[in-house]
Length: 217
Ligand SMILES: *Cc1c(COP(=O)(O)O)cnc(C)c1O
Image 1 (tube, rainbow, N blue to C red):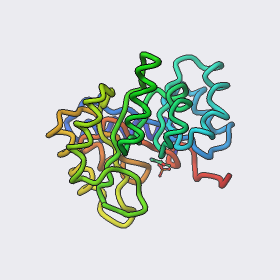
Image 2: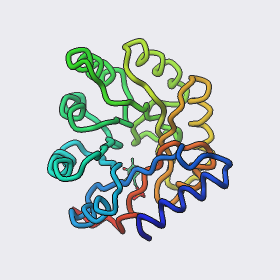
Image 3: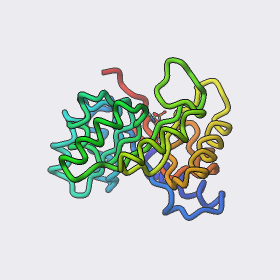
């Protein structure tokens, strides 16, 4: 697969769902990929990328951003509060807001800087103990709490359990977003982005289908 195959598949899935393809953003997940593969996608004109570690992103993106105009970077992995400042400087959106302590750290920094990246709240739809995210039953309260801190909460994000039908998780995330008046849904990866689009995804996070299998680091 190539970038243009995936871009076409995203648009086709949107059309099939009766949606405007412009309403689905493709985040190319470049974590752990060799730099030449990332550069190849940049030179094809793609500008929206996702990384799941602050440190790794800090190592490669300042240089790419200096060389390519209009790059947007989204953090899709867990964020420690002590890396919040660095994350706010590097990323245009953070998809992994998942606890009050992090919300407080971001709110404090946003006040100091007068700016905050767009935020998505991660929901642990499968209620998996090892996975980040607020539990579905706690989501409404946490969304309200983050909004009360004036944080720019735009939507929700989930990573379904690997061994379950993703559609049920996407539908649950869409339902929680809908009842809270949130318009962005970050859901869908290489294996299931078409299903996610059918359930209303506005951002799909696709790595290996664009770049090839990740080469261990
Ligand atoms: C790695 C990663 C992806 C991309 O996964 P692929 O299966 O390679 O498409 C998407 N979302 C998150 C949160 C990830 O960590």
